[in-house]
Image 1: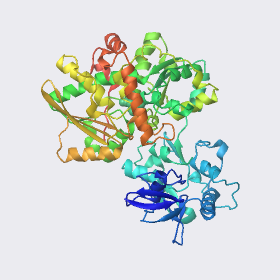
Image 2: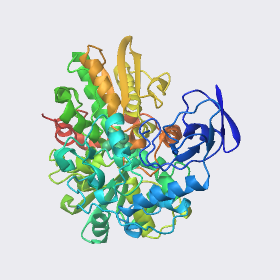
Image 3: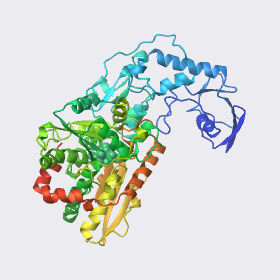
Image 4: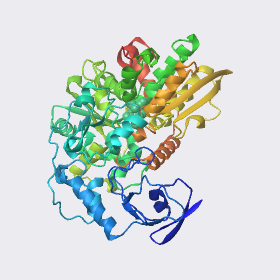
Length: 567
Ligand code: HC0
């Protein structure tokens, strides 16, 4: 331990601690912008400068380690002037269109300018007015708003291991972009949107489809059906002042009805369906010892990652489409027939915590119904915008129920929203289908929690089944390398985003480690609250097989619910 003085307070910390961390310990807030704990600690923006006694220059608190007896001042005229000047310079080459910016009122630069008392920008810097990159169906990159903090670059490289973007050029010409300033569409970007979660400003954000959805809702010819992803029910509330992880399923359903959707259904229904199909696929492959480990296939950023970086693993992917896509295919066939609606007039909208789902629904493989199975994907953030635009008071909404039958689901399905959930849901069903016995305990704690890689060996009927779970593509890479190195697993769940969908790139901002943990707790509570907690016990799924599909892995199932990804 060592002692230093910050603003006349004695602080005791471990050697190697930064001034920023030491100040936090003392309850002193030092503003930051480029700093992202453990991911981007580069001292680039110089917003966190402080005075260190005896030093000539101001020090960036986020990267300067403390020394014994150090005397730090965080709130002097010189410090305040420097911080203001640094932010003023950032604003001088920033496209300031705050009232119309997607991040207005949730922008770190705006908040900084306010908290530092900045009232004017005296300089005119060179703004990069290059047109925003709208080449992908999922993301928009606007260089004119970029403050070069490099948080997106760090997340893309260090957390996701993708490296789609980097700082290019020098000085005023510096730009964060794909190599050679190619379009995002033309590089190995997986469209996960983790960059949009860490961007402090409006330089990276989701491609917005709200106007298309408003138009469909206003069209009397269209029958507009909506599905909500597992993770959205524990995150949407954050946009309306609820604590992260608060379970707002009923209010979300009520809001969607008030927006005018003709039917409000649940992706969780299709998650149960996925378990029936993927569980059966696993049992089949496990028995034959074929193409093991089976890799889950429901996370579209992960699929794109395999396609770009590990095509040799494509045969290992489950042939199951994701629940979002299974839902679309079932809605435009089974449900349309059941209620006598022309699928050509049906519009399927998804509310997802994910930006890559926007890409997924436009993939050519996803037209099994004869139409594009899912028409539009809105992120949790876009739904919040629609609710606000419609003038709906979220807090005073009643708790409403999903419509039948594609709204019925189980506790297993909601687990999909957190890392380990698909595995746990699959095990609940696979165990009972293999053994014919009831599970002695429902929870598989081995695959829960936020640890990057989770491994377990479970006994099913005396046979050891070795499973692994990874979230965040950096961890996915590690697992795939282990498999290449000879490590034997039978079943591996991979989710593209840290934490799984609760940490998806379309979730409310901020999304950080603490918030992920809170949303994860919400997911487990939501599971406990369900009266049925195993996918194979969902009566509406049983009816779907009885009335339409026949049985899991039937010909019809294969046609509608499965696909193949080819290199
Ligand atoms: Fe997910 Fe899904 S669980 S990917 O994370 O499998 O996005 O929430 O909707 O499709 O169900 C996202 C979340 C989904 C799908 C489901 C899966």
